[in-house]
Length: 355
Image (cartoon, rainbow, N blue to C red; front, side, top):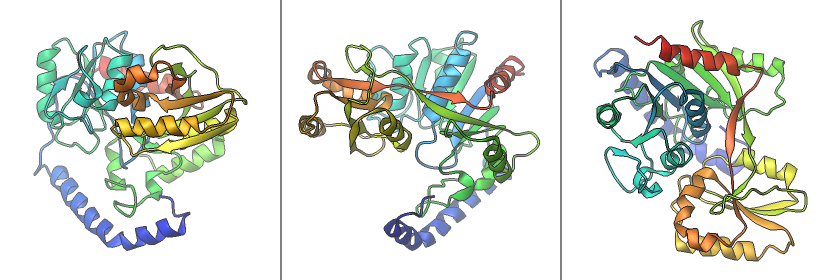
C-alpha cells in the first residue's frame, strides 16, 4: 500500500472505518468455510488455482500463460475465468466467433494465443466446471484464473501471487488499501510467487522477503520478473524495435503499468501515456483521443504501444488501426534464482500424481 502521496494518505485514513467493516465481513466468510458451515467442493481431476489477496495487477495472466506453455504439450489444458467486464453472463466456451465482449479481455487473450486450449468463463465456477467437462470431456487439468477467493471450489494446487512492489504483508483492507482477503489466507496456498521483481534482486533481499512472508514448512516461495518481447503490429503482426530515437504513446487499461513505463524509460527517447481504468472498454471517442494525442507528438520516429490485454479490446477498430504504427508488446513471466525447474516439477508432479 503506497502512502507516498499526502492526498492519497488522507483519503485512505478517512476510509479506514470502512476497511474495518470489510475485514469483519471477510473474517466471518472465511470462518464459515474453515468450519465447514459453507462447503468447498473438490473435483475428480487436477484443479490449479492462480490468484492473489489483493485487487490490481499481480501478474495472474502471465502466470496462467506460463502454465499453459508448461503443460499443453503433455496434458489437455483448459482455463476457467470469471470473464470480468464481459457483456454476457453465465458459462461460455470461447470459439472462433468469440470476442472480448463475450468472454472478457484476459480469456480472449488466452484464446488468441493458445487456440488449442479450451478457454471458458463463468462467474459460478462450481457450476461452470461440470459444463466445461461436458464440452471438453478429455480435459486433464483446469487452470482456475483469479479464483483464490472462490472457496466453493477446492483446488488441489493453489498458486498465490504477490507483487514485489506491494507485498500483501504490507497492505491493508479495501477500500483504504488493496487487500480483498485476510493475510492469513495465504496459508491455503502451496506455492507463493513474488512477481514483478527487479531482475537484479539480491539473495539478501530474497531471504528478507521470505522471512517476511513466513511460509510454512509445506509452502514454497518463488521469485519472478517480467520479460518483454518484441512489439508486433496489432493487425499486421510485423515486429518493431524500440530505440533511443523512438517516442511512444503508451495506451493502457491495466491495473499496474509501472513495469512497462520503467522499460520505456530505459529504451525509448520519450513516452506519453493515455491511462484508462483496468479492463476499460474502448469507445470510438477513446480512439479519437488516441489519434489526437498521437498526432500531437512531434517526432520523426513515433509509435503507439499497448498491452496484449488492451489489444483484444481494441481489435474492433481493426480497419482504423491497420495503417497506423500501432504495436502490441507481449510479456512473459521468468523465474529468478534458477527456480524454474523446481516450480515446473511441483506443478507437473501434482498433475501426474493426482488421485
